[in-house]
Length: 103
Image (cartoon, rainbow, N blue to C red; front, top):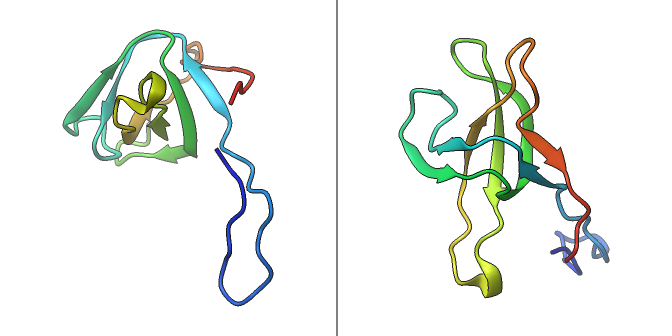
């Protein structure tokens, strides 16, 4: 979750801020590609913690999409998965809620 990281021939980065942590407020499929019709790779339940990697990208139909990474299970028992979530459409409620990071 962040830490020391050397980058190229320049001075090392001593702290890299981890991505913001969010929780789903609605169940949603995580898709492999940005298009909403792409293969679903995981069904994310309400309350699933995710890190948002890319905000407000548009698919071919012009719908908002978010690239996220799941946190994995407690103790690292479950693999982290990166994929795409549908963003809220005009007039819809948000699907993510910002959570304070505990680790």
